[in-house]
Image (tube, rainbow, N blue to C red; front, side):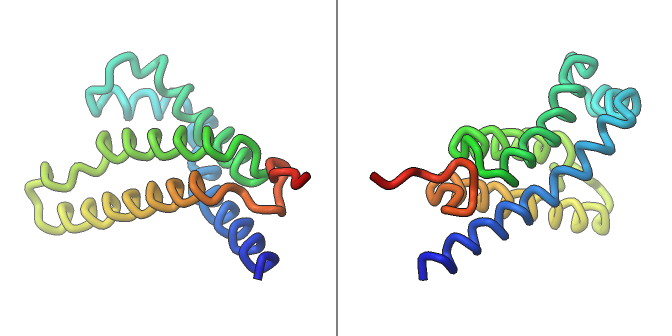
Length: 136
């Protein structure tokens, strides 16, 4: 059963990373566009926060993939996801019903991702990782 648990933790880490990494690479490749997007949302200091957010979406998934610093990575990525959700997916502010429904789906998806990251925080990376705990 332990091997199955470790495999599930690896696959879960890979799936979480797959959500963030392409987005981070896209943001890094068009940093000026992402900075403009943040500015349009009223984010303070978008020229400072855009590269930090893009780097988070690249470094965080890489740490998930290899399983290093699991608790710090989980909290960092959960916090990032919460902030991104509050910037982009406040569904209750959209006047159009269809847009509101679409944004509510995105909001709830992100809540689920945060839940998965909190489970990772508690469960750790498993044995198939660079961050596995050594048993004495």
